[in-house]
Image (cartoon, rainbow, N blue to C red; front, side, top):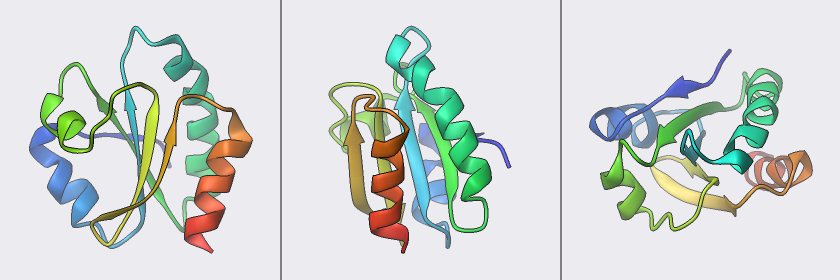
Length: 107
C-alpha cells in the first residue's frame, strides 16, 4: 500500500469518515524535513497496512484543514481514529517517533 494524497475537498471522506485509523502527514514540497520523513512514512504504510492508512496533505494547496487542525510547522503528522485526533507528532524526529505515536494509539 502506498501513501494516498488528500485535499481539503475530500479530507472528511478519506480521513474523518474512514473506519480505519488514518495518519495524516501535513507537508510541503519545499520542506526538507518533510522529504526526510517521506521514505519512513512509505515504509510504515507497508508495515501497518492492515491497521492503518497513511495520507499526505500539502499545506500550501490545502489551507482549510491546515488551519482547522492548527498546523503551525511542518512536517506535522496527526493520527485520527473514528474521526477524532488521538495523537500528534510535530517536526521530524526520525522513525522511532512515528513508531511510538502509532504503537501508543494502535495497540
